[in-house]
Image (cartoon, rainbow, N blue to C red; front, side, top):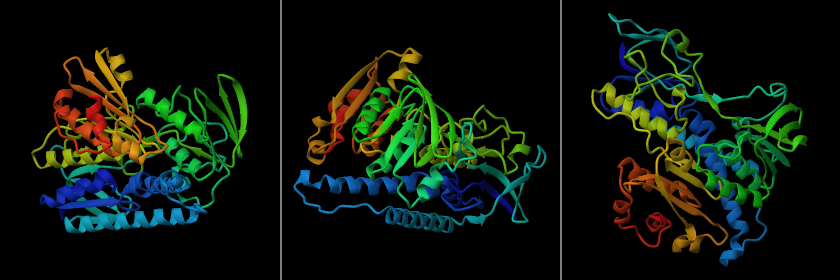
Length: 449
């Protein structure tokens, strides 16, 4: 049998593409070496958000008296929190499996290896898996990414966590040192801090959450500092030995002892182990090179998600997969990256879409920044006795929305409004003319314009 499309990797890009292809009549086969859902569902997005929500409920219960509600003897049970995380993951994995069946997708568990990419006269691509051979006319590579371990002396010989180990840990550490102040590091910092762990974050840059709005990132750091998290910025880890970490910053070197160490220094595309190294596909410095339709340098081979090294976000991967399948079907639009939201699910949340002030300044783009506290929203004040927040809107000289950045709950939901407006190239006046329901926290965007 010759398949119309073979997909390697069952993460957000892979299962989205498989479902779309199957529903559109393409004979599709999906290879996944472990569990459907990939890192996002099994070791990343969903598990961390499940843990963070438990932490949010715990914090809310502790603060309930401020809302006139009595909650005595509140406690958090990490073992039960981890167990619930597992239940959520299993339920969603089963849901994806059901989607594949409904779309007529053949799913194979095992490591797929491309053995022959065909040539100009014979475009069929041959794939081996579980001692079986499969042939497809098109191939979509969605092999994802893995944790990057920096070359820190002593790291490989230590029992440091990556996000994988942190998600399955059932013993709450008294102290935790996190190497890296990016999205993953800060989310874990927020979670463990909420449950009572003493958390220290070491970041090489001059601010946490590189790539997010710098001013709002600083405000979030201030909020987390008030909660007891210690930050060492512009600081590098010199060495790790057992549970001792030597760091070097503006104040020289110091040694920090910690019950646990979590390394969260970013991720890198997975490009080996699937025969990709034998395909002679063109690459960038970060991953596989693709065009606006997610085609690689081989016209019958596409790549989506983290393997391209461009935007290591699940929602980006989903849209890339949709673009790729539409192109295979002979229709659709080019991939657009101008309105990819970024969200950090701390408490409070922070989210942004479009350009940051730092990007606009580097590009020499003239803009106007408008900013309002979330306290201008009646709904926010009613529901956030302790919380604070900010909404920042960046407009071009022609009034077009260039970027929107929000600190405060529920920024992750509100940013969708701004993303649609930026993608549609709306002007501030056009969005302001829309009717927002009252009272909602989303009204803060309208108020800020």
